[in-house]
Length: 337
Image (tube, rainbow, N blue to C red):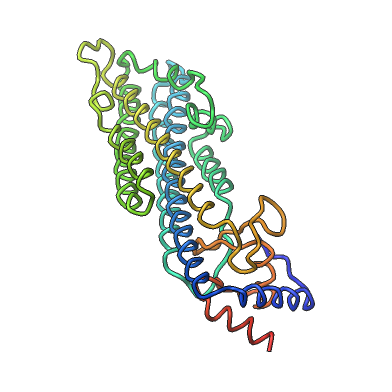
């Protein structure tokens, strides 16, 4: 999003306000604020990585359900179309995985302060783009797929996913259909196992950064993933084994997505709780307007007004005022001299 350019007079008034606010701070206050800001930044980075993993889990659920939906519509006279559906699913799943890797890398990059900074894209916009891409590749409707993927999370349970899984109860007699459905299950099961690895790694990276009570709850939730109930299938099953394995993969995916969503909300709360004000003008963040928060590419947060004015002061080449705080204060002091 392009910043709103400020006039020279607006920039002077802003710098005078910032200079006065910064000069009022004691060394102890500055140090305490830096600690809170860094903690908030770490929570923000973790929250974004968590959202990337959860969003991929949701897309994977949606893609598996859409693949089964399309297979259920294949005419008996054209069984080869099952394999076409499977190939579209594989392409879309690969794109979703690539999106997750990219989002994770972007979050990790925030740990390295750069010479320039920019406001990050809204995460909801990125989620919508990723789902639209997946829907286009698999040949589905993005809105319907989003509802399927979030069933049991953001959307209430409708039974739609369970209904689609029922077509796997009986092993198909046609070889092409059987192969396509088995390959979809095999691919989805592998994705769910990778998600488990991602969740475990995220937990290991994050648990030491959060308060003790939050860490204990995170550990409890992660431990529940590997329960016997989560991993096994009925001993007396009469249906095609793929049906039970796919149901377990689906339920495990849903469980992990729910855990990631819970982690994400807690991390968002911790980030907002540790930083309630803009560290530049020291005004409290607001939900909307000039003092709403903007998250920079380094995951520091400043208010919208400060970022827009700072961008104007630096002639459209701003750096993060927190990552390079001494340089920032030097520019402000120089203009006030």
